[in-house]
Length: 486
Image 1: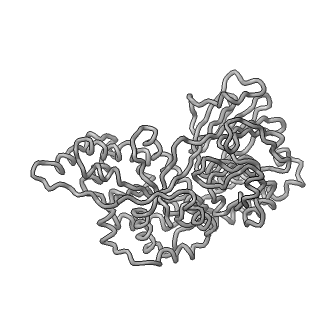
Image 2: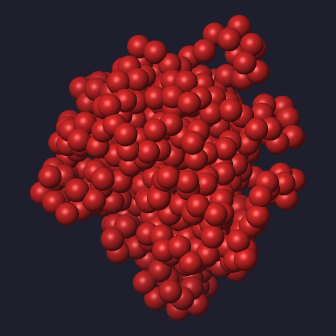
Image 3: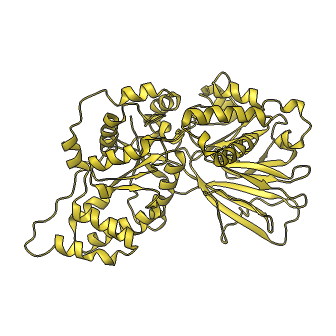
């Protein structure tokens, strides 16, 4: 019997709880409450039959599905006992470099709880390789009449063990199945090993790796196997900029020859003779401004001094100190044009709630950072949009925010002090809009570059004085299935 699907309403309370939960102590209690899960019983339920898991692993290693047909032949030979599918097959992708010293230990623990071939270290096997060869192996066996392979393919679920970047990477690769009409897309559960873990918080998996992780790992796998399914919006991001500008792109952005801007919204002004396009997908947020500049500097500082990155707590302390150094808190005292309001370089166009028309939205002069947010959790579990009252929602033309509502929330941060008050939830951020589609138009002027980030990956965006750079955001037409952890 399949797991139930949860609606937005069903999840509203549990998501708010997940977003506000920040204590690893609570997460540890989570791992030791409730009935005991027997190791042998769990292993029996989630371990994929040996011939299938070995065939998938070899197909990935060989990058060739046809090279593993002997496993099908042996399992389905005349007189052989028909293989039996497992009740709740699970595949795990782990970023063993995340979670500090726990990464390698967790990997070994996971391999002990299921077939070793079902645990993929992302340093060796990429999620796209699993989609292209591993799942294709199951699909080929199933097409030849292997009912065990067919049922395994239909039931399989995925665990992403890592930070938000790891989870987004896995979800993006699994999303290719939908584009290729290879349903069903496996639902994804999460083991939080990163610093912020906002995707994990939003879907009930907690905000940090539990202290008593050995016990908690069994419970997590049990929840992945049996938990209800909900859904997550994702957003396609396209950047159009004058050609010839060198840009150091983050992993999540790729050059594109087929991307284009929405023709319904006319561009005011001349366009360059030739443009360069970049394209990517985000699940949590996209931002422009001072917050991205601080993140950019912090990432470079950490990459140049890797000994500083010893875990989530040290990362947060260094990040806070770097914020002060960059002027996030002392901008009013600075004459640097790069520290002034974004309205000097930015125009914002949106399609508002229940509207198909593009509208220009004014940007408050005090705003130095604009965030486009998809989740109810941001910056390690905070909710800067706030839990807004029905009267305010109606007045502003907003709807209650959820991760699967087809809208993103756009808010502004004025400076470090304002951001600090927002992040401790004493006040809400500056509400700008709620939208189903967005276009940012940037023009240089005194600014030589702007800073942007998507799901924690920052970059320096070149600015041109003569021609605009455009960032357009639209919802991906299908949602990612997620296993809810609560």
